[in-house]
Structures are given as C-alpha cells and as structure tokens.
Length: 231
Image 1 (cartoon, one colour):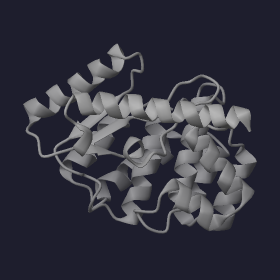
Image 2: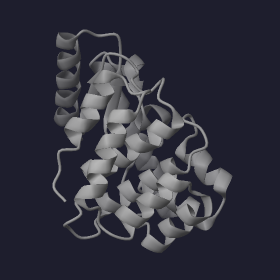
Image 3: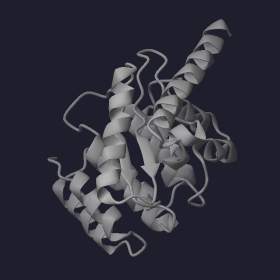
Image 4: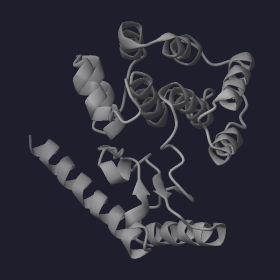
C-alpha cells in the first residue's frame, strides 16, 4: 500500500507540474485529452510519460505555433519535456465512433516500432488502442471502458495505460478483443498484435483514413503525415 500511495502522490505532483506549465503559457483553458481528464500515462518504474499534451483553441496559425513552442519550452525548463500538439479547434468533436477507431489504428501504426522488442512504449500503445477499439461511444473514457467490461484483463489494460503496470500480454489483448471487439478490432488483433502489419494492411488503413467522412481536412492530413512509416 505504501508503494501505491507514493505512486499516486507522484502522479498528483506530475499532473500539477504539467498543468501549471500549460497555465503559465496561457493554455490551460484549451487543454484537452488525458492531461485534462487525469488519465495520463506516468510510468511507475521510469518516472516518464508517453502522453502528449493536447491543446485545442480558436487560434490563427502564428499564435498556434507560438503557443505550442512556448508550452514545450516551459515543460523543458521544468525538467519534464513532453510532445505538445495544438490545433485551431477541437478536431475530434464531430468524429464518429467508426472513424475514431480507424484514427486509433492509424496512430498505433505510426507510433509502434515493429522491428524492436516488446518495449514499455509498445505495451502502452497496445493497451491504449485495445481499450479504445472497445468503446461503445466516442466519449467513453478508458476507466469507463475498463469498468463496463469488468474483467481482470480490462482492469490490467487500464493499469498499463496509466503506467501502474508496464506489460499487456498478447494473450490478454486477444481475450479482450475476441470477447468484446467488433470486426475492425479483430482485424487489428490479427494484423498488428498476433503478427506485424504488412504493407497491404497499412495501405488499407491509409485508404480507410481517406474515406473517413467525419474527419476534417486538417485531421486527415495530420494523421496521414504521421503515417509515413516503414514496415
């Protein structure tokens, strides 16, 4: 219990540090995503986070770039550098559930090193993506997904997403998707977890991204630019 109490205390400190840095740069009201909700990743073992700082606001491009750079610099100066993304409006507000699932697979393909070992970073993205592929609506949080499913595998996946645990096994991911996933999730399991994705699958996801009607032009181009990868 002592170790958990210490970890939760460190999470609160890190949250205050990041939110304070964003506030100092005048961006707290525009904070979105896991640092706004509180379900950000923070690894108990390394003290690092894989969660980006996401901002959305009614800014023009010069202000957008300046806001991103300012927050990045503040985080660097306080010794907790994180990637910062910022865009002019909440690009995810009108995305449908089906298109949001395609988005998460595209992000997974762009983030995971399929030629490397089964790293903590890979396990984080595995847990995050599996949980989001099991959502029933676009506003369902990681915690809500875990609690609705209620299995040990779901609880463990949420713990890996938070950083309390570091490994989500292939077997756990398989059980979750086979029991609760739909066709797209099952295809993801076969192509990306039980094996490495080949060029044909990656090309198919690119095609699906281009067909996602609820994506704004900015979101589509943003995702396609991130999906410049080799498999």
